[in-house]
Length: 512
Image (cartoon, rainbow, N blue to C red; front, side):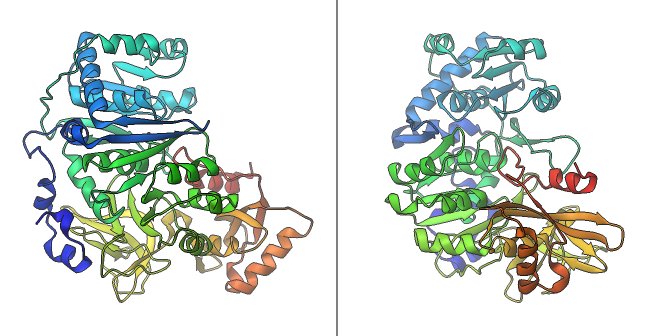
């Protein structure tokens, strides 16, 4: 029996092994190529990727089509003097060119570096100067990039580019080792001074299967949609590589967010399994457009930030599925999941879920000792060298479910009281005038810190701040209400769609 056939939670926990994940692939611990696993071996499966564009267009690319085009791209790289191990930056929105460039580079043995198209010159320079690509693929006018990065070949994905590819042979046999580097994935840079590249080998696709099977619930026959940008962690690993490696149709979104386009994609692509950041679901909820579309979801998961109770309840009413959290970090992968689609597993509202199979997760105190249930500490995962702290605080209950209380640097300690920014945010969005909110610690000369809320209001009016504070005092402990509230037009976000808490902390600290 394949590991894909295990339908019950107890069966998964009993039967799981890392060795069984390798059975899902053609490659082995010596030889593997990520593009072969994602495209070439699935040539007969029909549509691989569908893209919903913000302007209303949609495109569909078959496994066979992408397999042939990535072979042409690989041969084209060789003609341009690229050698194995060279970096190829792909600064292209989700489209045929993006998938051909990224997977073609990995098929050839180069290292693909997907980069967000809306980076400014400084943000782009940080990453380009770090990875030093030999070739940059761009959808934009190339002159500025050529001037900024004179050591790299800069190629625009225009008609001339596609004509050059058409002249190449589609046949290309990969020769990569499983431990060869395949992909550089840059973090958002919101928790450190500079962004950092997470380096993935071709065999990393095996590890991704833990999240694919038990965090997203991907199974053969699913029609899957992940609107997160594939230039960032969730959209790349869990929205693109994971489903394609299993031969599953995946859909992506290209362009400025539009709730109507998201709902149209769910309907028109016959999506049964969707994964996105909670912000996406909140914005779809706030659009009021759900009832205009015929949507039949079976599984729904989210990651990147906590989901408030109001949005979670709306999802159950609107789509008839229980939202399942998936928790981890770009650096260490997925740690805690809610096993969507598995029989015998109960999702607990508000919890992150339970540890993924094969992962040892605990709550650790400042001395590195494991804490018992209901005690708050840092979430940590066991590695060969010991416990690795993931910089989030939380606790677990008597049944083994984990709960998050916010980033370690988002925990607010005011006059000796420890407060959870997540808890305050979840209560704030229950106020009828609050559309969205984020809470951080602000310095205070008397209390050390106070909770400061940045609030996006549905309709601002005189007295709203005092009204919100009164509401919060009636819903939380008296010391937990946000003593400072600033009304804003929108919350700053990372390119991956998360609230940029570092920017808000800096703003609260400096007043700018």
